[in-house]
Length: 327
Image (cartoon, rainbow, N blue to C red):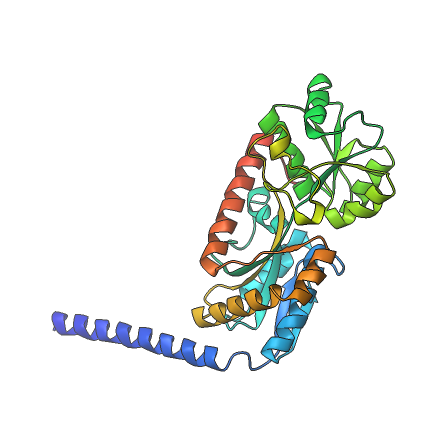
C-alpha cells in the first residue's frame, strides 16, 4: 500500500505540473486580453515615469491593447513595488524600476518584500550614464586634477545629490572608496536642486543626468569633467570616462527595466521580453529615448536577473564600506 500511495502521489504531482504548463500556455496564447498597467514608484515627469510612458505607448500599438502607466510614489518606490508583488501573477500588472531601486534592499533592511524573490525580471530597457560636473570656479579641467584637489583638501569638496542613497550620493562615495579621498556628501530635495546648488556655487560638484546637466552646461554655469559609465556615451561623446581619467574600473550608470510579479507564466515573460526588445530598437523610440539622455539596452530575463543581483550586491558592499545610513 505504501508503494501504491507513493505511485499515486507521483502521478498526481506529474498531472499538476502538466496542468500548470498547459494553463500557462493557454494563458499566454490569449495574452493580452485586457489593459496592462505599468506601475512607477515615483511621480510624473521623472526619468522612470518618462521611460515607462515612452515604452508603454509603443507597446500598446504593438500589442493592440491599452498599456497604462500608473504612478504610485512614496517610500522611495517601495509602495509601487509592494503593489506589484501583491498583484495577480497574470502579466497585467508590471513595474518599471530604476537603478535607485536596487539600492533599497541594502539601505532598508525592513522591506516587506524580497526584491529578487518576489519580482520576476522581464528586460532591461535603457541605460543612462551620468556626468560629473563642477562649478566653473573650481580650478580643475579634468578628473585627475579633481582627484589631486580632493587629496590636497580633505573634506573641503562637497558633492550635492538628491538625497541619502541616491545614485549621485553613491557615485561620490565610490570615488571616496576607490581613490581614498574625502568628498563630503550634501543631500538636497531633488536632482534639479542639487544641480542648481552646484551652478550657484553652494557646493563644488554633483552627478546630474546628462539631460539635466545640458541646459546648465550650455549656459556655462557648470563644467563637465567626466561621465560615470565604463565606456564613453554617444550622448556626450567628447567627454571622457572617470575610468579612463585616473580611476580605472570605475563604472556606474543609471538604468531602467521592467519587472512582473513572481510566478507570472514564463510564456508571458518571454512574450513581453520579445515585445520590449522590438519596440525599444525602433528608430522612433531610440530618438525619443536619446532626447531624454537614455540609451536603449535590452536583455533576456535571465540576464536581467543576474544584472539586478550584481547591482544589489555592489550597492550593499559600497553602502557598508562608506557607512551610509538611511535618513
